[in-house]
Length: 362
Image (tube, rainbow, N blue to C red; front, side):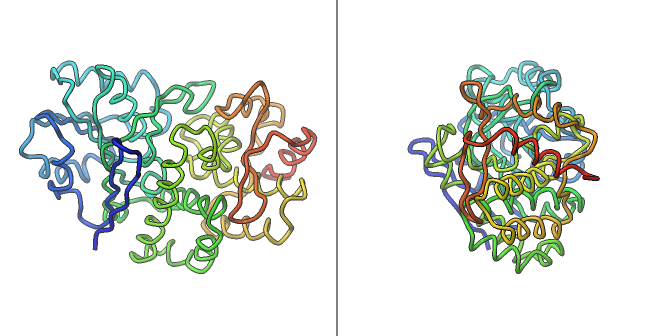
């Protein structure tokens, strides 16, 4: 059964379709394609699996494809140029449509290309990883990485729709599945204590890819994300809560070299660091901190940062963060499970203690 959620943004509102075997359902795509030209962007892993299915649903259009290398290390301006090259070589017009078929990297890059090409064309998200399905495909954040900082070059550009075909998760590697669960856990921590408790009860079913459990986790995650985006599209307030664990996590990704730690793995360790710091500030008790660590560990995700990044280097990487304001680092921390806040009101010594205690081998 297909579920439909809505991201309510006035004239730019769009649906999220969730269900199995949606790739070839052209009736989901066609209402959002105003012209005749469609370009599907994918990567070397996903294209052999699902490109043919995708194109069958677009057989009535002039379709072109771009297949990029797979990996976070390719999420940069140089590789992005290949999308622009293909659009220009095929003489795609302003009413053309881009389709992002892949994980978060493909979604972010395709969306950024759509935001830039001829000053903005439409695009559709067709996420094929759990992480992309529950998080990055919804909300219109697009962009690429820079050697000095993750996602520091980009634009807000909302998709016309999001098509989540849960059947694509059958070919997802276990490591990628676990990384996606990190973002699912995040929603429980920042605003949905009941969902966090459900995850505690159903983690084994998620890891076993139980279809009912996975579909429910995707739906609840997307529902939470849509509500936050509707209230704060451009991250001037509560949308920043979606970055729980991300300031720590982005420092791990950048410090270790893009692609060595998956985004969800880094965020998982980052959420444990946020829980530890919240505990040291006296905001959450020992029991809540342990609940966070235990659930993330059960999801087969790291709970500590890599020892290779020294504390001083870690803090320098954290300083290159979009939440820094007036030179002050702002972190998403926990007041309780289900209640997160953005704060710059903390003692620098507590941050240093957190970094020292949460490293592997500490």
